[in-house]
Each structure stands twice: as C-alpha cells, then as structure tokens.
Length: 606
Ligand code: GCW
Image (cartoon, rainbow, N blue to C red; front, side, top):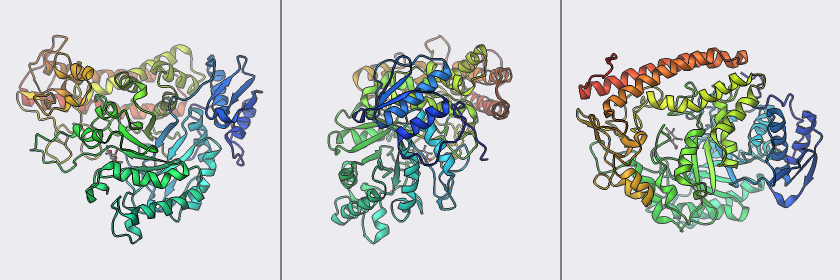
C-alpha cells in the first residue's frame, strides 16, 4: 500500500522538492505551494520559537521556528481559526516519537503495517514518503524521531556501526523538517566487539563508547542522542555488574556530552520473573524503588524517561509516582500512541482526554521532555485506523503546549482532516472521539484493575491470562473480593505518592471510582460512591460499554466520511463491536462465576 494520503494535511497537495536542506527552505516551499505570500524573518537565536503578524503577512522565528509558524499559519487558514498572538515557544525542547521498528521490518506492537524505515535486515524506505512523514511531524512540532526499537535486535546494532552512512542519509531528509534522529542502542554493545564486559565502570567499556560515539557524530552531527532500555524485560544493563542506573546512564552520557547529544534512559524496570505466589513484590512500585533514591546523581545530559503510569500503558492507571519524586533529575514522560492495550488501532481510542488527566495530577513542569511510542507504519494512511492519526496529531500539539484542551486538538484534527464535512457531522465526530476512551474503558478491565487482556497479543479479553504468570500483573480475584491492597496496610505502594495524592488514594472512600481497584482490594458487595455495589457496577459498565460500541457504529454510518476512510472505519468498527461483546460477556461471566451475584437488571450472564 503506497498510495498517497495526506492525513490532516490535505491542503498540501503535492510532493515537496527533493533538494530542501533547511527548515526555512521547507517553510518557503510549503507557503509557495499553499499560495500564501508571507514574508519570513529569520532570527537565528529564536530557535524553535515563532510569531506571525496579525494579518499573516510575516512570520518571524528561528530556523525551525519559521517552519512551525508557516505550518500553523496554513492550518489556521485551512481551519478558519485565529492564530495565537505573541511569540510561541514550545514547553519542552525535546518532543520525541519512539518507533519500535525492528531491522527485519517488523514493528513491535505495530498496528499499521510494517516498518517505514526497514525491511529484510536493512534500511528500506521511500524517500518521498519520508519527506511526507517529515511534514507530518513538523506540522505539529515533533522534533526528535527515534527510528528503531528499544529492544535492539541484531542487526539493528549496526545503525551506529557500519550503517552510519545510511543513517546520515536519512538524517539529511528529516533535517529539512527540523526533525533530528535518535537511535536505540544495546547497553551491552561493546561485548560484540571483543570487550569481555559491559560494566559501566570498566575503562574499556567507557572508551569504546567514546570512540564509537565520535564516529556516530562524524556521520550525523546533529543526532539527538541515544535511547536505552536496560535491565528491563531481559535486556542487558548495569545490574549484571552490580552497578546502579546512574552509573550506567552517566557512562553513556559522557560519551555523548562533547557532541551535544542526550542520553534517554527508560525507567521501565521491574521484575519480570516474579512468582505469582509472591504477594509482597508489587510491580507498580518498581520504578520508584530503582530510581527515586538516585535523584540528583544523573549527569546533565541524561533524561530519565518514565511511562505515564506505574504499570504499563494500561487504559486507566494513576500517574507514576516516579514522575513526582525526582525534582533534581531531567525527566521525560512517555505515552504510547501505539494502541497496544487500547484496541490495536482497530477499536477507536482517542488519547487526549487521558493525557489531560495525567497532567492534572502531575503538573506540566514536573517533566522537561516528552516522548510517545509511535503508531506509524507502512499503511497508506500511516496509522491503520484513519482516526488513530488524531493521536499523533494531538500528541504534537500537546507536546508543544500541554495546556491545549482535548476538545480543541480533536476538533482541529477533524476540521483539517475532513475539510468538506458539515459542522454538525464534525461535532458528532468530535463527540465520538472524545468519548471513545470512556467506552473502551467500560468494556475492558474494570475500575483501574488493569491487565485481564489476552496474553501476548494484548487484544481482547483474557481475565486470567496474566494471573498465574511471571509478569507481576495480578488481580487476585476470589469468591469474595478482587484487587490488591496497595495502601500502607497492604503493599505500601500508596506511600510513594506526595501527601495530596496519597490522601486521595489511601482509602476506598476517598479514591475515585475509576481507580478503586488499582489501589484497593474490595468485596463484591462494597458500595460505591453512587450507591451501586462493586459487582453491579462491573456488570453495568460492561453492558453499557458494549451498547455504546454498537451505538458508535450507528453514528459512524451516518457520517459523511470520504469513502476510503469510511470503509476502513466501518470494517474496523465491526471488529470493535465483536471485541466489545467478548470483553463484556467474558469479564461479566468471570466475576459472576466467582461471586455468584446476579445482575440486578436480569441481563444474561453466561
Ligand atoms: O508493554 C511492553 C510491551 C513490550 C515493550 C515494553 C517496553 C518494547 O509489551 O513489547 O517492549 O512494554 O515498553 O519496553
């Protein structure tokens, strides 16, 4: 599938010239194509910042700033929106996309086709498509693209070895869009080169990285840096050598520092060999335990990248306490645009409302950078489901300015993507997207319980699939109760939070309903805030979620979507309904069989 589709940029009608090298050149080319006669004032030290004069006749900004200003001007014109006044500056200097693309062309947790960059163990891409991707990213202000999976599998090591000339070529393409590349590296890479250890305090190891990194920067002088998954899910790391993660990260950071590169170190570290009988070890506590005490010990160019929740991109998690515990460390929050646990880009799931909630609890200034796992692939529309593009679009806007509201981001995407749609239909689509996460949440694992997802694939129900396993993901349902007590009387997880959040989560009464089963073990006859019992709430949510999924189809059928998008969306909608039904009936049956409780409304429990 290589047909051309422009996602939210339908106003970019043709391909860009191939010879663009700077963002300012790209800005000129884009404006010319759009027939907009705006003057560009380049002010080098404005960097990424920009402003547009009231009448839209002048764009002032740094080299990348003018490009961002140009795109926003084009979008504002296309959407009939007013441009913001004054100088616009991004909240975070690093606004990253992390691709989990393997060199063999497979994408880990990818739901929109194969890799855009690799196939058959080598680079393999369409340069025109790369330029189109550069446009997409730059149009929403994304400025760093990590092209390979954090699980670095052979031959992806070669990206920073003998594939450097090709890496440089790709970097050239993206440079014209203000997008810098990043690569994931294997912590134990020196071992492949005859060094018997990867101990971060061993001189030979540090030296290997210094030398190798020099070669990397000779080829790609503006590489953003390295991304590392260490001591996580069987990846190598400093723990093997009795070293902590500050020692591991700093060693790599020092190789990057002379070149201005950053070392992004993921904090997704937990025991993935847990015995399910062990009720003391509590996986959500792991990141805080491994990192919080190291606050202040990381070099300046180290960024710790922490997933938004303490578990793993589940539908509903509280904010990760690690993000609140390291004021002396540069932190990045990591979201997942790829819908691994949220419907595989089959089920509709717009994420902005969820980001807003996380930010409401965290505060935008707790982190200094932002990353998201890519939902991109080789499919003609890049994201599999045509509506999944809303997450990439909104992520860029949110990373630039986290005060953007979900409503505005989603409405703007609809407006740009479907310019011919009448206002009433568009409003309906915005409503459907705004509500899509709530619907998905209702028919999947209840009230913050997490997991219950089919093992391995992570699509569809499997209430016990992760229950007697090594991944630390248990609900511990029995005939009386469900959930894990994470209060001070239980695992103590709640103690990792600062006082205000701790107080909120500490008791079942103070804890919001949607997170009750994340923090508490509750009896099925526990009475919720709205007067329903826990078991009745579980039944109600699941029946409702399924009904709402069916209602979404009726809504979709009446929307005047372009025919391709309509076909794709409706075909997926049928799969979503099937999925919702399985989830609803299996989760309800699961709890019915344990609890013996009947549904107050007499609906069928299997
Ligand atoms: O959720 C898990 C995924 C893995 C992924 C890991 C991670 C890249 O199932 O596929 O590995 O998270 O974030 O490292």
